[in-house]
View 1 (cartoon, each protein chain N blue to C red):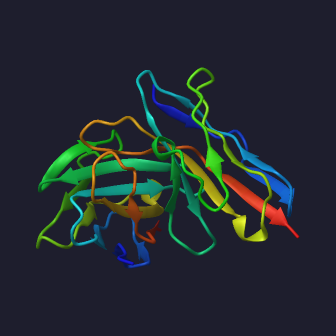
View 2: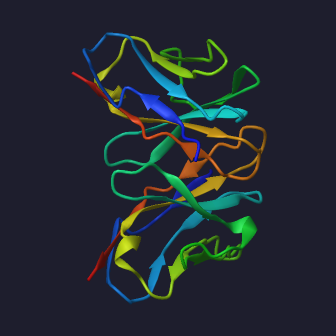
View 3: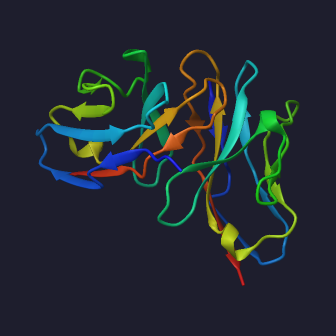
Length: 110
Length: 114
C-alpha cells in the first residue's frame, strides 16, 4: 500500500531552535518525495523535492530508503516558518498524482 | 507569477443538489488534478486529467463525480446529488512537466452540504 505518515500533528518550537518534521512512507518502488507548505491563508506550494537535493528557506530533507523516511529539517527556526507542512509521495507513472500525509502544524514561538 | 484560479471560494448547497466547481489552470500546463480535504483529514487525490481525458481516478471518484474541460481553459468538477460527506475543501492543481512534482495549486473551494 502507498502511504505517507506524519506522526506529529503539531510541533511547537522556539525561534532559533532546530526543527525536524518527520515523514515516513510506504511504497514498494522508487518514489518521488516532496514537502509542500501552506502558510496561513495561502495556497499549498511546493517547498522542496528529494530529487533536487536543494535547500529552500534553510530547509533540507534527505531521503533515507533504508528507514523509508524523508524528514524535513532546519537548524534555526524563524517565526515566519510557522505553517502547515505536508509530506507527499508520487508513485510516478503517467498521472503524477500525489499521496499526502496528514500534515504537521509547525508553530514557532518568539 | 501565474496562478490557478478557483471559483467560488465557498459554496453552500443542499443535500441532493448538483454543484459545479470551477478552475482555471495555468495556460501552458498539461496535467490537471482535483484533490479534496475533508476537515481534519489528509489531502486526497480524486482525479487526474491529461490530453482531454481522465488519466487516473481514485476509488472516491465514483459515478457521482465528473470532470470536464469544456472550452480548453476551464477545468470543472461536477458533483451530482451531493451528500453531507461531500463537504470538504476541493483543490484544483495543474502541472507543466511530468515528474517534477511542481504542482501549482489553487486556493480551493470550500463546499458545505447542508
